[in-house]
Length: 99
Image (cartoon, rainbow, N blue to C red):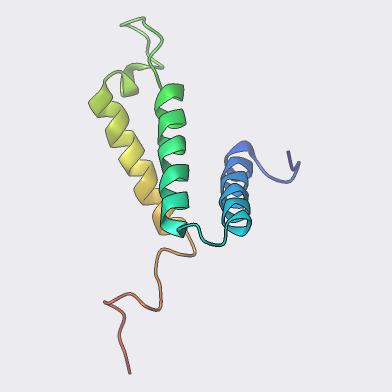
């Protein structure tokens, strides 16, 4: 683990590196399939890590104590991380102005 990166940044960096290694290893692979697979794994891991402890009165688990609550938080984080990404906007987006 890079001592300069916090665990969130290190994990994100490693996922990007894994996707790049997979794409480099198989030049015929569909990049969208690789990205979808990485996303599926990340979502699975995130949901697994957010399982409530089982104590219905646990204050720490209360905000994520239902599947709907966990999905709301996951969607909020996806929106946040997407908007923070350098790739959120593309020069090829159809809503980009052309001069």
